[in-house]
Figure 1: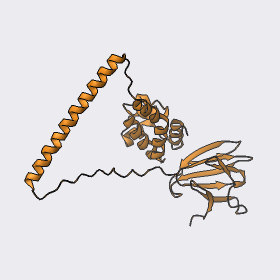
Figure 2 (figure 1 turned 30 degrees about the vertical axis):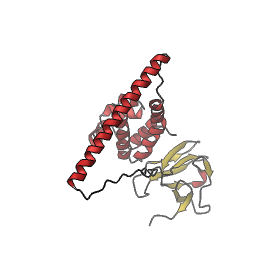
Figure 3 (figure 1 turned 180 degrees about the vertical axis):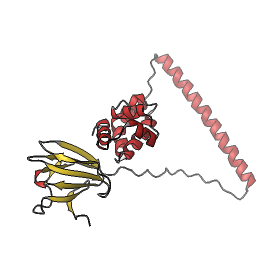
Amino acid sequence: MFEIGNSLREARLRQGLDFPEIEQATKIRSKYLRSLEEEQFEVLPAQTYVKGFLRSYADYLGLDGQLYVDEFNSRYVRGELEEEEQPFRPTGGSLGGRSSSFQGKAVMLTVAVIAGLTVFVFAAFERGANPTSDIVLNNNPPPPAKSRHKPTARLAVSGVGGGAYVAIYLGSRTSKPIYQGTLEGGRRHTFLGRHLWIYVFAPANLRLRLNGKAWVVPGRGQGSRRWLEVTPRRISLAPPLA
């Protein structure tokens, strides 16, 4: 879990962007952008708008918009779905419950009869228009949808001693860095992504944790600066840029 609003705000401030400029580029009103950074999601019209605005805003800042939508779903959507799925329990006495149950069964029976007649008439019409055609009923359930969830690297970087200069890149190390600066005095930052790149100067002063597990900075004896590649499963030494 990471802080959605603070992460967006830090990315915007690092790039020196103001709300009017972002509003003009994304067509999202400034008050909604501010609400996203303050995590006041109830200000937006509906959850559909929250997810769309989160994705657009994060992508504009060079972040992974889908990660922010997934984080919002895990924190805010699940509880509402559970409430909607709770079974209906009548509050009346036994007589009222029997009456409601009888009325419900009558309505369901009527709907089933109407649906059956509709299917029969439609089938008869189709067979009359094309006597050689057959009606094939497919009772097999559709195959389950494949999960779109992909593993994500949660990378925590911190500096010790005299500190280490780092630049963090998302997706490609030739893109614009999502963070760059000197980590010292125990300062720590956390980044999410399916593929991250780190350029580090003074790696001996850098501490790394990947998905909660501490990692030794690879490339011991490789000099005072190096490139590191981060995936959801490992941190490895990357070849220098050509």
